[in-house]
Length: 153
Ligand code: ADP
Ligand code: MG
Image 1 (cartoon, protein in one colour):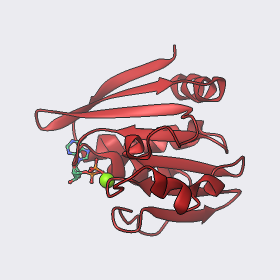
Image 2: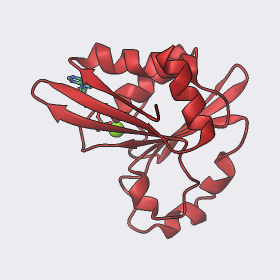
Image 3: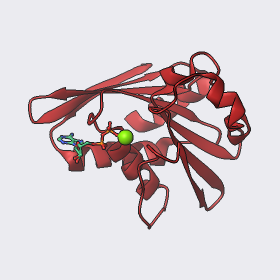
């Protein structure tokens, strides 16, 4: 299937989803993270980075716009575009150059860059539900589809 849904009763479950996706990922993948402030986008990114072998802290890129993590074999770029006032900032910052076959890019608030972003392989939508969260993970490319297949098996 090209969609994967479920519930995340607590923070540990959001971290675990990131860890599970880390094991299913391949270099070059672009993931958009959708959801309101506090939905769990950065928490998910933390779980994914830990799953890829990052042992240190994961700082929210709210003020820096991007935090980069050089890991074994690939670099993860974690963007948060919440503070973008204008999509043009994407080009001005040179962020296009961060995408490629040797990186994994996670983007919080991708809509803030309008249509300037590369296409997402996977989109994770998080929603608050009671004390926990629900999620929907959608693949929009063949690469994203392969990741979802590995996630399910
Ligand atoms: P965002 O990056 O979407 O603004 P954060 O990842 O910073 O959100 O998370 C905001 C808060 O939500 C954190 O305190 C985090 O522990 C909590 N949180 C994350 N996932 C869950 C979950 N599944 N259930 C309950 N709380 C969660
Ligand atoms: Mg965040």
